Length: 257
Image 1 (cartoon, rainbow, N blue to C red):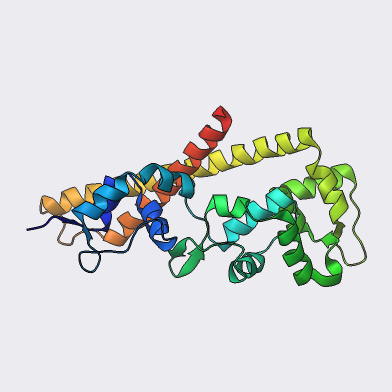
Image 2: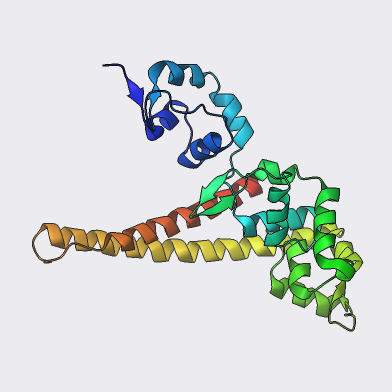
């Protein structure tokens, strides 16, 4: 019988993670199955192995982001109050490729987000905001700076930033804050510390839940419990633990760079 590979085995042969393989398929970096539904021939897999480095370079190391996280990334880069709908407009106009779907929602690669021209992004945001294009509300200002709302609120008081009659801040004032390197470094350090604390709490909470679930499994195996533990509990805890540890790893990587 001719050897064939399913999606998981194909991804392993290319040394790609699940999300990388899914994105590679969506973007046409991996050929369609040639040995039946969801199956690839050994010959095709072997030929693709030579493209593995190129595929990884094309996808990058950051998992795809949904519209909210994509908007936050674009906002920080351009210092604009980018919203989810702006990301959708960029995707609909062909400026931003869709790298796949997660729970039915489109996701986007970091490298594609970083390649969106700032001028194009500014045009999309301005078209949405109309006569409000030169001002931002408090939430939009925090988003443009990559800060938490509390951080921006504190800076408003410290710097005496003024609002217009609609309760909005001048975009120029927000960009002046973004141009203050010392201020931005301090804010980034505060945010990273808060992220670490939040991730560690989540890690501890999910670890405790998983240990409790494993203990329940042991009781069930020993006959002390009549019903098996709920698998959904383990899935939620594993997902939360994975996310928390990814956050901690990403922050460590940034600090080392």
